[in-house]
Image (cartoon, rainbow, N blue to C red; front, top):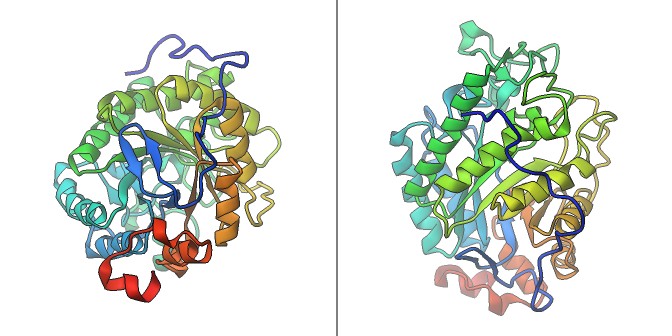
Length: 381
């Protein structure tokens, strides 16, 4: 349930230093997070497949995620997985709000682990962006009409994302606690399903991020106003997830580090948040950006978000994952070997080539570090 006072003291000074490496790591060196050894520093970024049935994973997910494990990825993160039905982006989203959703995920995770990958899941609530049609089912802009299977979305404040979106219902204090309870219950189910890392989705304008950004949060209670108050939902939720997940397994948070718009959430804010998350026991910050406003001016290009991961790693002293327009093996190797981030997460590039890690390891002269299944080793090893 929500707390009345500040949940975490925000650290000051220079008591956070970058994670230490005993030697300069290569892209295909393992990385240790708590008791989990991820076989290399290439991860599959969570990508929505819009292919679940009532939140239940299908054979599509087994083949889609399994191919990336066979191809050599170290970390495989299941797409944004809703913690309650109204938290889905679309009716076809993955979910972990029911115990019946555990078994198909357990099957997938067993396969991922058999072929050397670490299975992870991003737990999410779409908030004011919830209830849109899946991309290939859209016949009109914005949200599904109620008569077409839509539902009432929710948020920290009644501010629609665009004119084509419904105005979200403002969450009461009691409802804030109920949503946090849903994240905790989904975290328990994630552990039962065999995931070895859980990630709180606090990016891209979805519910947790919308509490952080002043564009979407105009509350006047303990969850709005000052930066400390706007951080409260993320900090409380992350801490409760950390307490629920087995202590020997890592917890990550994906953050939109910068709204890319004047007056929004910015990198300096994220540094403060990342320090507090580290103090709460969080192990990794997954550094994305944008999604809070249609007015964002995003300078998209190769490695455009890497400076965020580098600065957070250095100034908050927490491990980071870099994402966004990372496509070339040499580019990924440079990010890791120069200490700009501890991992790289690839999305579209791993859709184009599920075996990108195997090809990259060979190109970088690190093929001996990546053990491929014997069925493929002679061909792409």
